[in-house]
Length: 277
Length: 280
Image 1 (cartoon, one colour):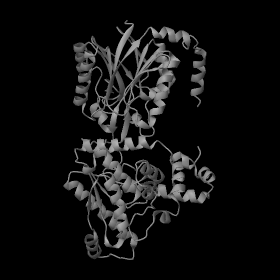
Image 2 (cartoon, helix red, strand yellow):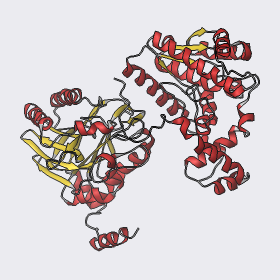
Image 3 (spheres, helix red, strand yellow):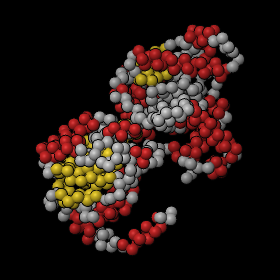
Image 4 (cartoon, helix red, strand yellow):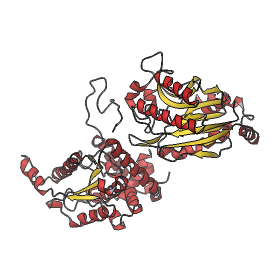
C-alpha cells in the first residue's frame, strides 16, 4: 500500500448511446493521467452509455467482465493507471436484468465491481424501471490501498458509505450523474460522508446536458476532516488531479473518532424501526 | 413552506447561465445553425430572444415578427426591436394577413364570430412560419412558453407551444419578468401585460381571471404538492379559486402530451416507448 496516491477526477460528458466514443474519451484521459503520474483515473456514473438512454440501456448493457472491461484492462495495463468508471451491467444469468455498476480495473486486470444499491425512481429519475438494486457494499484491496465504491444516490444513505468504510475502504469513490438542481445536496453530503466515516471521499460527476438534464460537474476530493482538497469546474468537462495522503486518516480518526465510537446495537434498532416505517 | 413573493427571488445569473447553456448545447448537438423564434414584443418572447442571442450569438438567432391586419400593433413591433437590437438578433417581418385571409376564405365552415377558433388559426399559422424558416435555414424552433401558461393550458395546441425547445418553460411568469430585468431588458417591457394576441385587446390576466403574482404562488404551491386548503389559507383567497386553478391545470394535461393512442402493442409511442431525445 502506498502512503500517497494521485487521483484524476475525469469529469466528462457522455455521448449518449455511443460506447465507442465514450470509451475513446476514457482512453484519452487515462493516457493523459499517465503523463501526469496519476494512480487512479475516475470517470462518472454510466459514462459508458450516457445517463439518459432509457430503453436503450438494454442494448448498451454488458456482462462484467466483458468486452468493454477487457478494453479497459488493456488500457490500465498499458498506462499503469487504475481506472474506475460506470456502465450498465447485464446479469450473466439472465437476458435483460441490468445493474447500474461501477467497475474498478487495475494495471493487473479487472479488480471488481459495485452494483448501485439505491436506485432513484422519483422526480426525473427512473432507474428502478431498468435496474435491479445491488446488495453488497464494495471495498477492494489494491496495491494502492483499499478502495471502496458507491454511486450517486447512495450518498443519501449513510449506511452504504458506513458499510463500505467498515469493510476497510480508506478511499471511497462515488461516481455520479447528478443534475444541477441537486448540487447543494451533494456539496453537503460529500463532506458529511467523509467526516462521519473519517475517510477520503472522491466524488466524480458527469458534465453536459442530456435530454434537458444538466449535470453540474463539480467533482471533488474531500479529506477525512471535510476539507475540499480539489474541485472541478461546475457544468463543464474538466480534468483535475489531486493527492490522497493516507497518513491523514490517523489524524482524522484521533480528532473525531467516529469509528471507535460506533454503537453496533443501534444498528439493530435502525433495522427494527426502518422495517416499520 | 411559506407562499410569498420572495420565493421567486432565485439566482437569476445561474438561471441565465444554465438556460443559455441548454440552448447552445441543443443547437450544437442538433447540428443546426441557430434558432428561430417568434418575436411578439411580449415578455416571454423578448426574454427567450435575449437568451437565444446570448446562447448562440445574435447572428444565429432569427426573430420573426409576424403581424397581421387584425392585431397589428406598431408598439409591439417596436418593443420587439428594442430587445432584438440590444441582443443583436437578426430579424425579419412577415405580414401574415394574406395567409390568414386565405384560411378564412378557404375553410368552408369558417365563422368569424367564433374568435377562439379563429384566433387559434393565428397561433398555428405563426408556428407554420417558424418551422418554414427553421427548415429552410437549418435552425431549430425555440418556443417562448412559460410555466404559468403551460400549467394552465393557456396556449393553442400545436400552435404557440409547438417548438423544438422551450427554454423558459420551467419558469413562472413572475420569474420570467425577474430574469428579463436581470438580463437588462427595460423594466417597462419586463412588466408589460401579457397577451396571446389572438384577437384585439385580448389580455392574459383578464382571461385567466387572476393576477400572475397570485396565480404563480398558487401554481408553485401545487407544484410542491401543497393541498388547496393550505394554499388558499396562506394566500388569503377563497379555496374555490385554488380549486378552479387546480382543475384547469389537471384538465389541460392533454395539451402538454403526445396524442393518446390505445395500447395495442408491446411498446407504444408516447406511452412506454421510452427513448431519449437524441439530437446527435
